[in-house]
Length: 386
Image (cartoon, rainbow, N blue to C red; front, side, top):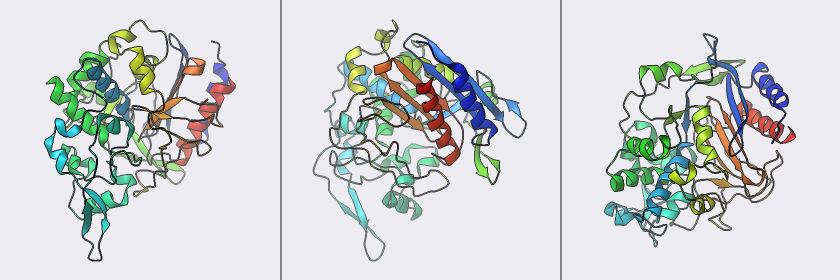
């Protein structure tokens, strides 16, 4: 496949020059080639340090796809089934309640779920778990001191209640964090050790990890928010040793490493069978929620995220780890494409129809910040025009 690299270069350079975002790394891939690769801007905007090929990004929820691969490995080994119940491994799950709201005295009102959470529910965000930055009830419990925040650097946030009966709705949440804990329980390894042995080493992803050395921290791209016409650096320092390995987030990676991961899902690589069977890949990247579609994620924290509604022109069911487009998107992504994103405005998609994957990494808050969102849209459009 040929691609007009100049067209994409011009698009991303314009995004940087017009003050949309301070740092952009992007790649376009086929199953066996890197069709495009480019860096624009600075890893440290204040010091004007040019963004290099080996720059390390916080990929946040792009971690979820990696965790989902690990779960399917355990399914292939017979240690799990998609209909396995989470409470079989963690009995305390059987005591979870649904938070229905708050009474006139501002006390939480709970009810008992009528169905059990399964592995399939967790993979598709239909388990009833939510995130504080997109759910008012969870956010309010944290504000009242009755629940730990996701950002507390330990696993206490996993004690969160459900927000609906499992399987009855869709809400983006901490379910894949529970799957990370499950991987550790079944493998007797930390999540980082498991990923290193079963995903990163086979795919030769040499710069992807939770824990960070000083050398890694020196290569990490700074995170910014917008400050008028400029940027304000935000204090995100990667921990030397994570207190909790989040299956839902917190991996650090490079464009090169994550490109290798995405190529796993396109036809071709001989290494694929060492990581995941084709039938597992097909299941992960296809509609697994039927007509139960992704809904708009209304923000509860404007500093962390804008409202989230990808491609409002099309319905979006969910696969086992990926958002799926039900129909063609206006930017060029065809129906049945799979993809997702990370909180610091990193994005990817898998277009198996055209044997193509797109990947773009930025480091800004809030999520779907206007400049970052425009950069993504323009990049994707330039890929298909090219």
